[in-house]
Length: 115
Image 1: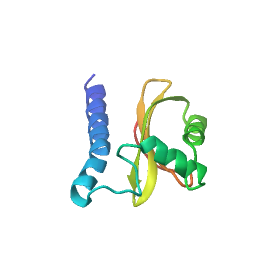
Image 2: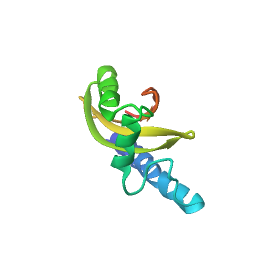
Image 3: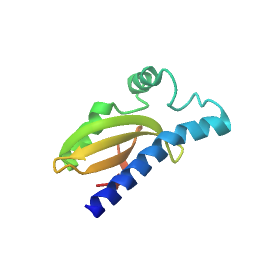
Image 4: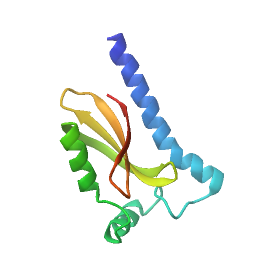
């Protein structure tokens, strides 16, 4: 039980850090029109996919699903190392939660946290 609570605390911390990253960037630098995180996220993402600058989310989900069976809980977009990225919260079939960071331009999984 203690281990489960520790894992849950870590996941909440990771989620809070991911959620705070765009706000912190905005506070320091103002709105960044080249990345996501404000109003119109979905329109900007669709335009990037149509323009070939970004892989579709469906492709990202298929890649994750092939490697780690489970289901998508939530997805946000932001910046990882200066590049646009998808942050996919994923629940495995046994209930573990993993956050995948995926390069939005190539579709490659950059990192995974949790699980």
